[in-house]
Image (cartoon, rainbow, N blue to C red; front, top):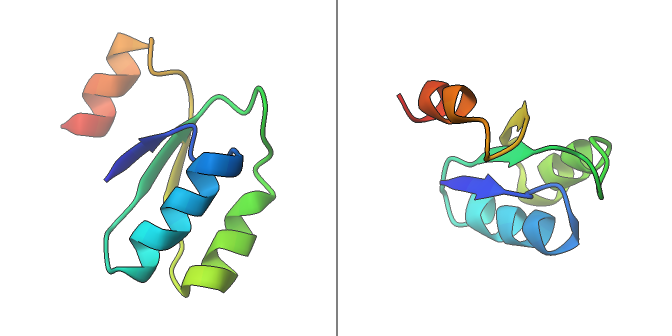
Length: 68
């Protein structure tokens, strides 16, 4: 599951739930309103680490790379 803004408050809680329910999660976040330091907390809570890509959903080349 691709979660944009996944390291923010709402996104991080969503990612923890997805991970706890067995989903593979890819977070795409530009970190303008969040911090990378939330990733280890997600792993501790969910028992599984999400993949993380720093970037912006408006970057077409990056989106192509992530989705293919």
